[in-house]
Length: 217
Image (cartoon, rainbow, N blue to C red; front, side, top):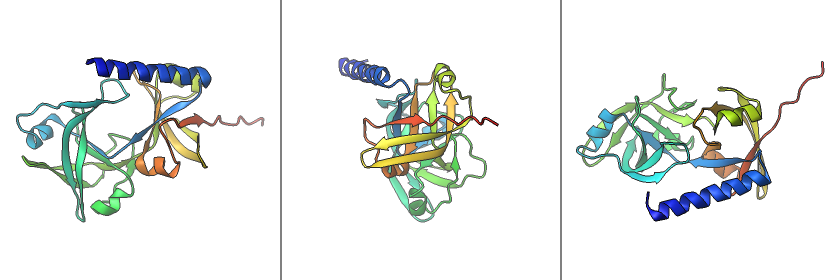
């Protein structure tokens, strides 16, 4: 880790700790731009002789944006220079915003990552190669959290929650947000670029889970 990376990490930790002290129920928001996950075999076809190089560390442990990009080609159009995320996975998939389905011409379903049954296919192309990937989805909004966070919020894996986002000039309520607790996850809500834009999400914007009202009957 370089000195600059260490300083960035320290600043992030200090900022998050300060936010947690001020509001322990605040959930940071991560805006998920379109991206690609590849199997090792597909990576080798698109980037022969290369290793996946880290461009930027992501918030979830072990996950990173790589320096490698490729074009996503659909029946009607192309998304150029789409970032590949690492590490490699057991199945290649492409995650896009709903507005981008029209440009590509693919009826991408709204799914959690990895739920690819019946999802349409696109071509991925670099200067060195091309592959066809069956698995284009619009990511369903969700919250990564630790097991401790899950206990605090009173949720378990797969539960749906309602989330409130108060940003400048726009109060937005998002239903059907999926809880994704795991031992090593860091608390973060993931929205795609369409959803974040609609809610006017800024770098300091946070989300809050709206507690369910318990019936007295």
